[in-house]
Length: 123
Length: 395
Image (spheres, each protein chain N blue to C red):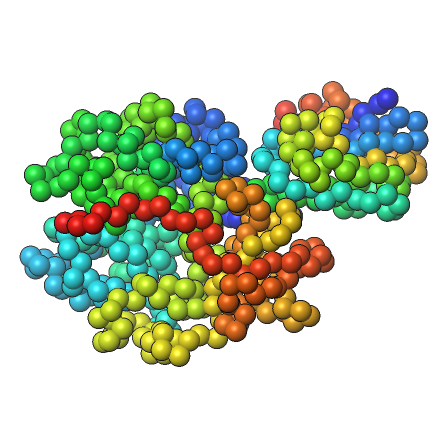
């Protein structure tokens, strides 16, 4: 399983042709207490960069973009009752949605863990 | 991801000269997340808005509100009659009956009765002390200089910081630090009544303390010389009930308390009656008028206004923000002026201006959030009851 990161602070973990997407620990920390998460429904087609999800914190609502193109297979239903999972476990239990990967070539545009760590260190 | 729907004005912004206030280093040392607000670096949060909000409702939160403008208006005559006349020409308060050490909420009004700013005004022995909003203070100073007669003195006390200690344990905490009345007739801090103020002395430093604030809780605002602000803040935080709280929680607290915020719920177009601030028009001024926009405001008082500011409770967990459109059925009837998640209530709340006919509690409306129509119900404000400390017989 390989994990990639975007400049907009999404992570995507790819396992075969299925990927899991969420926001990074850096992102949840910047957003603060998360009060609501809107996740996409299974079957929704996503183009790379499309708004797929909305994360609401006490102070703001933020769009979350699809890191790659594909189709949503599952939204994280646990977030309906427990949106705070995005704060407590952003890169594990607080995942937002799972999707197919239409073009594995798009992953090449993303950062690996070391590159992302260097990227946020500059922010 | 990106912040696209923020409207709470506590986001970072690119403004060329962002200034630092006396407690800047103290906030940073305490882990405050600093953002640009009203031209200054200010702490938006320390540990998290939710926890800070609830801490203030249950204990005592220390807020740095030094960005606000502290102004003194005075005249040379001993009874300040000239200052009263001059200020009453600009705001609808009855200053003639305001005793020394008493505070009022009032408004600077434009010629058409629109609100230039909302403010707190306190009578002191040698004049009036005004606390105005940070984002509007330079315009306020310009307005006052333009419209106050030349023989009225206006002083901007930017040599003072301003701290707000808010919450049910604020009195207990403040009284524990040996802050003494500066004059024999002044009561100890924990005996001040809501909207009462006085001079105090702490370690030889003069403090002006009022029992007031903008969270709906009991509490104080403390004007302290800038050079002593850090020592005072540090001392207050040694009390187990006191934690520093950021502007993020200040915004959610004031929203729950149903208190309007200038630049959001109030502006130069909105008159005080539509905004739900009829209480700020003093009895004598209602009878006599003589303040800017009196025709429009007095007509609104007697006949009602076209729109009213209402509170809205949303049923789900998704919050609606300032700028979101409000619908009654298919008709767009207004726009949110404030909105967010209410930590004490566990649901989103908002404020909006809507036609008066839709202003009754229980009216069902919809708010458009990203194309979704979220159901909302008009609710009586405050959303969370005020807990101000009022004595039976305050001096």
